Length: 198
Image (cartoon, rainbow, N blue to C red; front, side):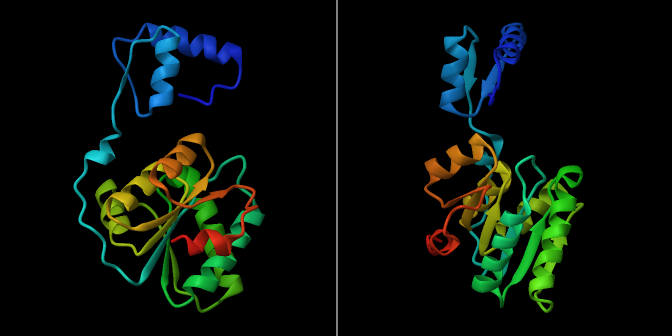
């Protein structure tokens, strides 16, 4: 639940949720928030956690999953591209657009940045995939750098070494709970240190 940014939004959100027959959330903090507000909420795991995925044994493909967001910026894209070229110059880079309306333009932009820095890099935007294709493809990666919660969970369930890009509190919480490296949208971290944690 949230972040709910003002009291009016909180009032209407809670009013609607109190009228629901059933409310489920996927994290303890949201469950406690709703129960304290008088909403009978149930804590459930996200369905992706119940998936049985084979452990990845790939050594050649790096996944990058990006989405457009209000805090997305060229500084992050450029710094991430430079780090990927530095650490993974000899690997294939698959850039995942999981929701083309929100992801495809920034994924295409990132591919262009990669190729402007290293014209011979093997990079490709993956888009228009079915859910099954996404799960299968992400599960076969060696590394995943991702913004979306489900991209990260899929990668971690398959044993893919992952870095989270923190655009939302749910991603930050997932990274902290799973003990994986986290990059902020302002890219203030030393990426060498972050990627060394992989």
